[in-house]
Length: 436
Image 1 (cartoon, helix red, strand yellow):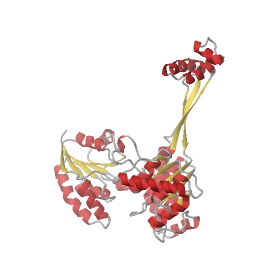
Image 2: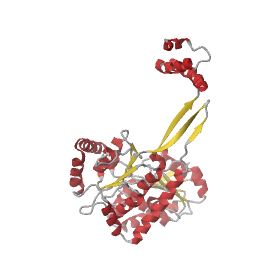
Image 3: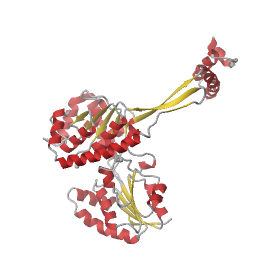
Image 4: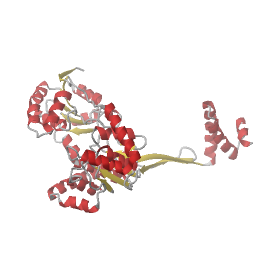
């Protein structure tokens, strides 16, 4: 397989991780000791918000009243698609049991009791993130869902995000963003349950707060800058390919976009078109996309579709869009991606906003080992077992012998006492220690 780079990235995804970690650790420690007053101080200092933290029912209703009906219908449409997909996922979540010996072993699927959903709202108002996180938690059967999002001075959470949060069934909504929002949900402030899991995208500070808290509570995944790859052959439309790349580059200055193709003419046309498409964007979108294209984008010319597929597997992109012939071949061949988009009739933007599958996805190559947010992230697969006395006798001998080889005498004696109690044959000589 031969791959030629027609455009090479000057930089790779990076951040001032050490400085970010130190700052976030200090904030979390201060909030842990200072509680709600410290949260509110951060809200005043960082977001210029000194209004109520908990959003009341009247404010939720008022948010709906401020929106045009056409926007509310679009949000309801997206919510219905996302809910239907999550409900289909739930039908794959199964309890089971099996008779291994005389007796039964099994598993149960139990939703977590409380979830915290973070909805970004700084430069862009991420209505879709509210839909993706809260809806999925609700369908999974989570007992209590808290959602939070950054405020705007004098306004609070933007009305469209509030409407989406309410529509999806958030039990509580906090006028909080950043580390202080994450900490409030994790610590169970404002009389709310402590979150068992935190989900949702955010900036580097939100991502680092989730990383630090992981273990104490669950998180959906470690998130980096969003990334996207297009695989295209000679059947692809270069303008559509270019627009799809630019649409994802606008996420941020360090959001990589990659094109792998078997067609040099297409690659060259895409590289010709992209700068003009970026220039046509409003600010700050144009500046973000321009920096991402200049520093992080790559264009690769491959000698076969298998070479394109292998590049995709190696990069394990968050979003992978195939604009090539024989889509079934690609669906069956590709192995590492957060979400796959097949054909020019779909686009990553559909997945980001309204089509149904979740947009909270693994970044920075994590798609090699994990998928995106789903109902399964809110579920615990737990096991149980029951045995009759005949099974206990058979298990006891094996357990005692294995335990003694391992040097775990206490384990062996827990098996021995059952051999003695349920014996139909003489116990092993070591069992006499328990009998006395």
